[in-house]
Length: 206
Image (cartoon, rainbow, N blue to C red; front, side):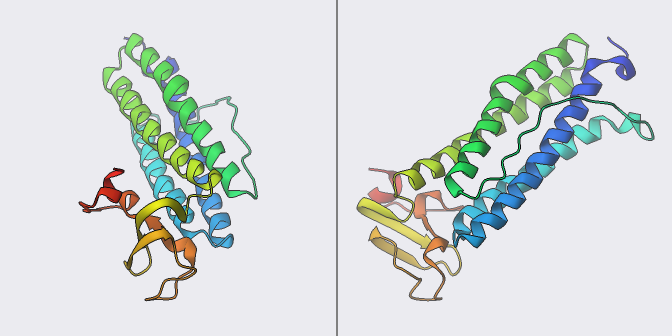
């Protein structure tokens, strides 16, 4: 086993902590921008993911506890995704998450395994798998936005107002929620909502 203080794994943990911390802040800023665009449904997607990135950062930070009181110098490339376009914000986030699960964390896991830290290697691998879920989620919303299908569909679709829970069935989302007057941007396809339990064909993508 390589001594932790001189290991590359120690440095990779700090790189991962920095990366997750920056991702959390980028997504929080993106959420604010989405809200300003009257797209609170995208705001919630960014905030939901930002909170998970914060948890990832804590996992990596906890592995560094034995280094408390010391400093670790790292180098790294971090993106500037300060777009004013919702689609570009989603695609940038998808790209970053994809790079993490395809390249960054697998290489960190391999190095941790080589240096004798299987628990840390497992954490890198499991979090890489989560980042794939993040990438797929951002990509799915980007696809809908680019096809002008975030609030419209060619077929009868079930939608839910994320503000009050009103269920709407139709090919388009109303201009505002008939129950709570929430903006159109509060509506989400029902099958994409948390805790959905819809057995209609539309909810199953049939």
